[in-house]
Image (cartoon, rainbow, N blue to C red; front, side, top):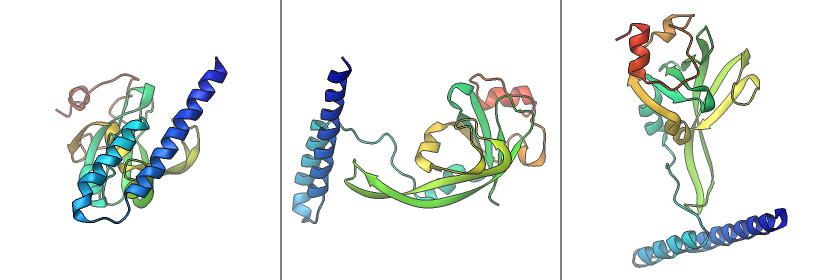
Length: 198
């Protein structure tokens, strides 16, 4: 059975590679009249390779600023429930993480990056948000201490279950969290009620 899976996997990789090559060839220079024909061929090649459109398109810097800066966000934290984050306009970030009794302080910056995207058939520019926390902090997702981690803005936006304007919980003005977040799903309204901020 493992051999069949390997063959199936190799065939899928080959189909995707051929589709990516076709996308590259089909996305060259063309007249306006040929654009709709090209788009149909690209869609057909994607479908033949089992590819689909991305769930979320990359964010521009302006879109990332509007979505993240000056907002309190409720972020899905894998199997740890949710975390609350506030990104201040001055480049500071404040994190209320499940099980943690203190507000984690860090910094954030935008980084412009780009990589080949099969759905576009070319490199696509995207804005990532890079977070830096102190050396004593451990990233709960990868176990690494301190350092800077960059996340594509679109991916981070999809993890944001809710957001609200301003520093809803006053995380930037406190060292201790309003209460220790349990590892369960909740809402900003639920947290605000429990913290007495509503």
